[in-house]
Image (cartoon, rainbow, N blue to C red; front, side, top):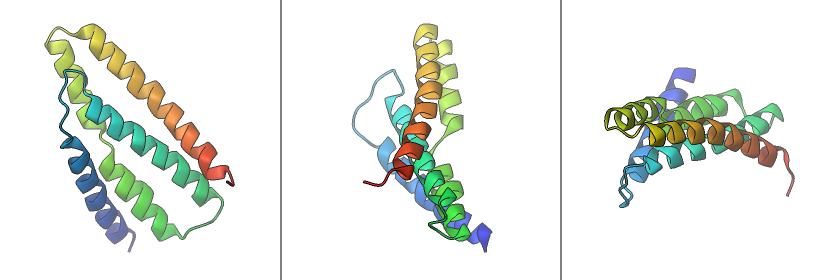
Amino acid sequence: MSLLFVGIGGAIGAILRYLLSQLPFQHEFPLKTLLINLLGSLAIGYLSAKFQQGHWFEGDQWLLITGVCGGFTTFSTFSLDSLQLIQNGNTPLAILYMIVSLIGGLCCVGIGFFLGNSSF
């Protein structure tokens, strides 16, 4: 049953990622991938806090965290974007992208976890 939840969630996450990737702005800096990964990190932090509090069933965790968030975020695209920036001679921009992605992702997970534990 877990496999079914992961598959359904993964399809939903991938569709959401595709829809966000179709936003009209284009720039050399991979802003859409960064936005997708930061939003996914925020969601993972929030959902993890809620699951630790025992608010949902185990199947929900497979569906939402492993499925939706896993299908939504994209480490492989982050890696490819970084490599392409370097290959195009934009190593400083690639380094900035990597730093913002990693530190921003950690911060977003932390903020999401904090929000998930807040009662407002």
